[in-house]
Image (cartoon, rainbow, N blue to C red; front, side):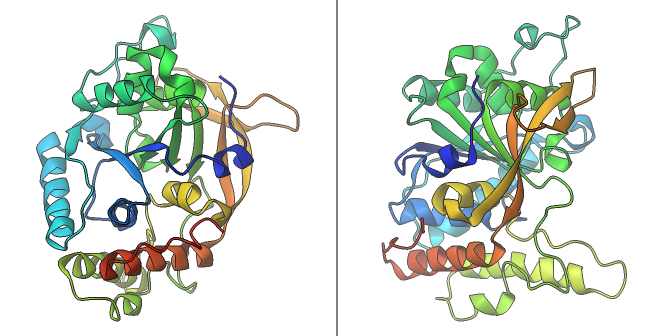
Length: 320
């Protein structure tokens, strides 16, 4: 597999089939951003996949927990009048059993409707117009699809968030996708969304001038939650900003990504996902964001949400 360059990812066709793959929806507003694009006819959204949260080896949460979260959020979006949204498809629900051989090809996939959806879409795609998967949870559904049909890997582009932290709980799944697919990641330390005293990506007051709909209220709730927990006096926590939204931003507003580093996978021991920055001219597996334009992302987010809430379809500035 030839790894991508940033320029290649920035030139992906606008009509690529898209899949939104996450473990939760109600702790982020990036899903609303993607759904707004679909509502406006600016996204060829083919799937909304729930991959089970695999924190603590997948023991802490159930698939039903994620389904409840997804259904509640999609109900809010649809009650607000947004259309062109596919139904929820359930993806992988467990960590992989790493084969004793240590070979990717000997890994048993986790069969699921979500993995089969990716296989079907990718078989009908091409390397020039691939299926673009926005991943904000574990990579197990994408990895399973590649194991079920290895020929689809060149026809997938995976835009991941938080590969080496919370979302990357299954290290073997990370290894499979990072070494088999064209992938870019956002959220490797120290790059994350702006923290105090920096201005947030989603200032709460920016929602006040928008039409008062259920989805507006929900997005404002998330922004308020991040603001309050990042400014409280006792044990302030981080602001997760647009959460898993940097990948969608790379697709819809590609110039918001400014610089990346080239990363190679260096170790595949059990339970380990070891990486290193590739030296100049050295082979690499995936790209990791090192500089993005937060101000441009903020304006792109609110321009898209405003257009969707007001029923317009203007998209002239989206990819500048």
